Image (cartoon, rainbow, N blue to C red):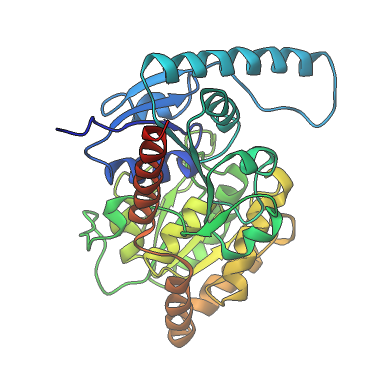
Length: 362
């Protein structure tokens, strides 16, 4: 007698930091029937529909202060929970996997109402509000940083690192016209770009480029200064779709410290200068980055304390100190597990096997 195809709902939305780990896990479950829960007009509407059926719910995060908008947001949340519950029942979903953020709230609550298990992955060192509040309703909170468990005393946790796309795990060739024997610096602000970081990089670039180094600057598409600085060794683009190859080739990265970007830097053993996004919820990018600083994989500066002159000085010092770069590279690889996506996939498979066995008893 054949076993029916497992049916999984993935709830992941918004930024690459939520979506790419979820996609990496989904790729490890080729025998599963997977559907996706997201939000209209976010990144998932571009990345997901070609591979998985996408359902969307209209939802947004809660503000810190209570007001009329809070009632409006709560109404949206109740509607999203009802819609997600309907999807679970109609599609006969057996298990939910979510990477956190506000999309996780209706997914976890609806799964609780439907009496099916949830596996939640929390990539940030400081857990998000939904993880703190609803993690105890999940069968497991898989964590990206070992120290995160102390913030989740009521949840069952397991360190698994954070999944990355397959392209980061295999040797890649960089299809850009950059000589093999020159230093390459990659400046990146995460999937959303970072205008303040971009300004710092452009103002530091002339002196860095004078050394013969190349800079690949990924700006995002919100920067009105794109095109204002040009140089033969300065490659500026909003995004680049071969990030695995780019970071494998890079000698140094200048980056925000979102959990996804940090994991990609760790997997590719890329030394980094981190500039945490100053307005991240609960300052989580700073705490993410601090783990890399403590391990001597990265240097980190608060954005408000970093001038173009200091950034230039720091980059030039690192480029002139090969041994320090090699040490940073060696320490970076200790901070991530290449098998993270596979580990989470096996957690999902084992939980579903257990749930099916338990259900047969009744």
